[in-house]
Length: 172
Image 1 (tube, helix red, strand yellow):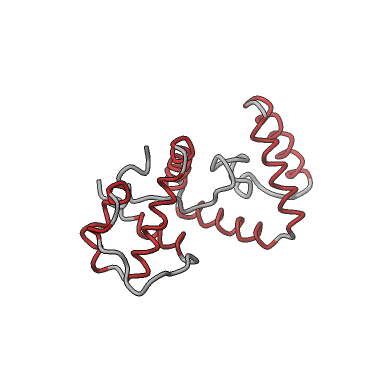
Image 2 (cartoon, rainbow, N blue to C red):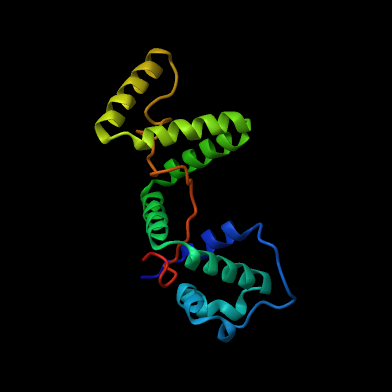
């Protein structure tokens, strides 16, 4: 199944990575595990500019260094992200941009609240969300749409991207 979204996601994630050397690596010089992870780039490898190739190799190595459980969680999060409507993804990206603009102390407080919420059992989470919705509806605050129809819609605070396009062994 073609998965064209990897290039976009990886290049987005790689945007700030430092470049090293004048030429990007040749496909044949990549270690076999990295070739497996980046396998869907093989046909286009020589058409990528050297910096893109270096960035992809760096990301492939980072992916391989992650514990299998973390890779699985990231892959599941990415699949949930892909299942959202474009409008919902846009709304979540805007919310994330607002979050990033908050003062650091406020971001830490929100992240701690989110962590505590994630540690609750599903019934506690449901009751908490009911109270939250009732409070905000009474106060004219956030709507269900604003809240993403429940905290933790993405299963965490990872708001987008993710390694994708299949990448050989990335989703295992």
